[in-house]
Length: 236
Image 1 (spheres, one colour):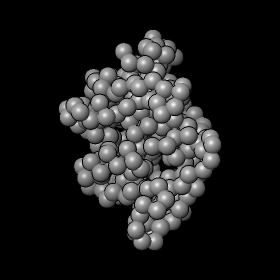
Image 2 (cartoon, one colour; image 1 turned 180 degrees about the vertical axis):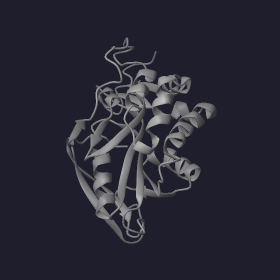
Image 3 (cartoon, one colour; image 1 turned 30 degrees about the horizontal axis):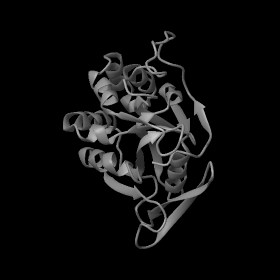
């Protein structure tokens, strides 16, 4: 994770309906978030995803409920959405992976790129299920061999993502970027730039959790962002 930096994020649609759902703990329910973010998708997947959203998949509420909120971690004022409690429930963990797999199975994804560190939890499982390779995007000095790097600006400094040279084996490989949470989008933007420098075609960014603004399906650097559930401000 590491979503601290800002980048150009532009909304591409309004919520699926004008009706505003009741809010829980300052955020709309997980099902409402899923309906909104699933409403605009790649053309080849639009119909099945829209239908799934309309059906208000009960798995989404279970995923939201399984995520623990830890107040003031890692610093004062941050309400940390902790996925480790979800990982303790194999059925719910599987539901999260399955929802991503159902979305991307028919989208001709060549590679799944996971952002260190929690993108490594979901990314390989998704990649295996859809028949794609997995590419780790790591922090500096973690990868052996030749790498390409992309720096990005944080609130109080800079950070960097690195990828092995040769991870993208041919121009135009279709890549899905995976992380656990999107807040400002800075880390995802860096991942997009890094992969595009290697001539990959970034299809979409996928995150388990997103801040409420991402429920209306934003784009980062022109690439869609898909989230399963909204972040929460407190435990229910």
